[in-house]
View 1 (cartoon, rainbow, N blue to C red):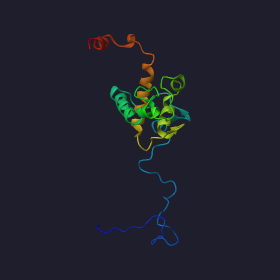
View 2 (spheres, rainbow, N blue to C red; view 1 turned 60 degrees about the vertical axis):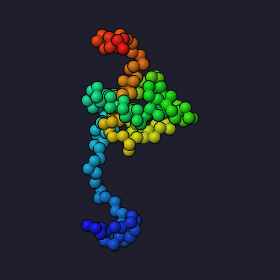
View 3 (cartoon, helix red, strand yellow; view 1 turned 90 degrees about the vertical axis):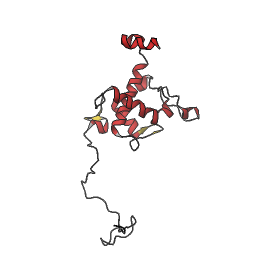
View 4 (tube, one colour; view 1 turned 30 degrees about the vertical axis):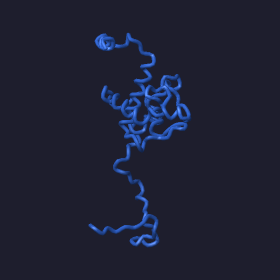
Length: 167
């Protein structure tokens, strides 16, 4: 095992005459980890339309995970509160739309997922950096951020309200 055969990509193949060492996979080959393109969780679409709900089970931990991932990947541009006032904006990068804006609030979860995956405008895609479930967790967190824009103290359960004012 110490000496493995090695061929540089696109050099003439020693095994297949007239071919290069880099070979295309056989037709209709599917990678083991390739997503099912009919799965809304993989594409953000169902029957050609953006999904209107997060297709994974929502829980407090899931949304908190989204907040953690948002802080790592999104807050630099979008700001920790989703206002669009991230650190890179203060250094001259174009300001993204605030998550509380009517334009962003009108977006359905499938479209938000696609924007995170493939990018939009000057935002580049994060599909190669953020795993699929974490992208949905970020979407869930963004939806929670949007809801906080119009929340009032009356929306807080009484037991939780007491905790807020006792600190």
